[in-house]
Every structure is written in structure tokens, then in C-alpha cells.
Length: 184
Image 1 (cartoon, helix red, strand yellow):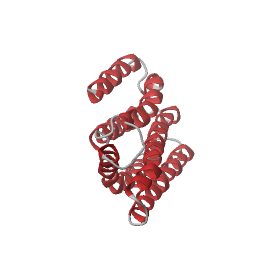
Image 2: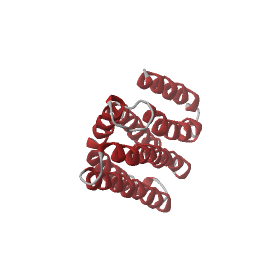
Image 3: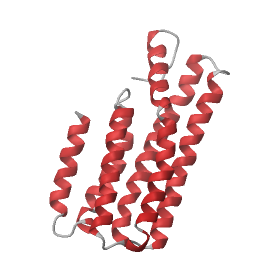
């Protein structure tokens, strides 16, 4: 689908798809604050404090971006024609999907700053949960899964050996299988 957002069936469809993705923004915004904060608190003594704080700061960028998308979309919906609104916010939606991937993917770097397999396991569970949530919330626009999913998966696949020494290859295979199942 293109983002022409013009008048007609295609433009109406794109506007509806965009609105469907927009509806899950408040949950994503809350998750981008709560999950990292709770994780940092729970594992404060199991990883570098600087690394945990840096990750939480990175996740606040996602919170800011998600809030900007949510409130800007809401503000403009009453001020713009449907086609202009869709054109404006379609690419912004894609940018937020990519920002989501980059920020959640950055959690993989925490494996370099911990020796705790339990902490690494929790990070992988969060990653799998975010990917599953994305598969559900972004399903109306499957290409968004690529924008978010690839930046989440690649660092986690690459750093699996740091997270799970001697078992990284197994985890990498599991992640690829999981990604293929979600893509299906």
C-alpha cells in the first residue's frame, strides 16, 4: 500500500489502517515507560547502573516519540482533510515503528553489562513480548513489523552468545523460528 491517502477507496482504507494502529499508541507509550523502569528496579544489582540508566533514557525517547505521534495525530484529525491527515501521519507512523525497533533492540546491549542469566532471560522475555504485541497491534500494516521487528531481532540474535554463553546458537535459532512464526 502506498501513502497517497487520496480521496477514494484507497485513501479511506489507509486512513482506517492508520487509525487502527493509532488506537494502540497509549498502551505502547505506557509500556515504554513501565517495562524498562520495572526491569531496571528489579535488576539494579545485576547489571551496570550506568547501562540501565542509559537504556531507560533511550526508552524515554520512545515515550516522547510515541506521545508526539499520538497527540499530534489526535490534534490534526479535526484540522485536516482525511487525505492530508493520512499523508502526514502515515510516514510518521512508520518512523515510530522504526524508533520502537531501535529502542527495544537497544536492550540487547545490556547483555554486555551483566553476568546474570536471569536478567538476560527477562530481557529476552520482554523482547518476545514486544514482538508479539507488535505482531498483534501492527497486523493491519504488516510492513510496520519489518520496520520494528528487524531492529529488535538483529541485535538480540547477534548478542545471544553474550546473554547465554554456550547456548547462544540455540537461542539464535529459537529467535529466528519465533520471528518466522510471527511473520506468518
